[in-house]
Amino acid sequence: MNVAIVFDSKTGTTKAAAEAMAELVRAAGHQCTVSSVLDADPAIVSAADAICVGSWCKGLFFIRQHATEATMDFIDGLGDLDGKPAAVFCTYKTAVGGMLPKMAARLEGRGAKVTGSFKSRGPVAADGFGAWVESLG
Image 1 (cartoon, rainbow, N blue to C red):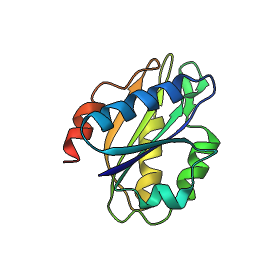
Image 2 (cartoon, rainbow, N blue to C red):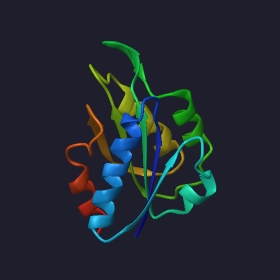
Image 3 (cartoon, helix red, strand yellow):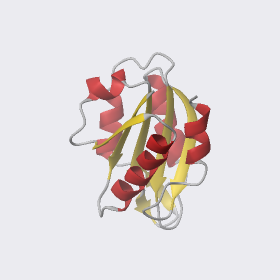
Image 4 (cartoon, helix red, strand yellow):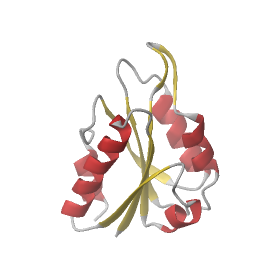
């Protein structure tokens, strides 16, 4: 299975989390690409068997948490995902609010079946991500 992980990272924390997540994907025997939303080709990501999109949490400590505009624009640029399994993730310091459900809804609007939603406080794979990878088969 080919999994595409795409992220937006301001300080490098989200990039490091995405790379740690990719190691779990590869350890499970799958192929995995990791790209920034600024560098990723939406057509190539759309062609992957499963996708995971992540962002750092933008907001005011406990309110107005949201994904970056670049992340949401990238999702909007994806082709028809035709029921492909997908996941969303974020890195955060304090709270994530409704950020992950909004990202998931946007991916579902492109046709994905979002089966994972993860958050990480640091540059590590989010808890539960390994189980999501195992669910891919």
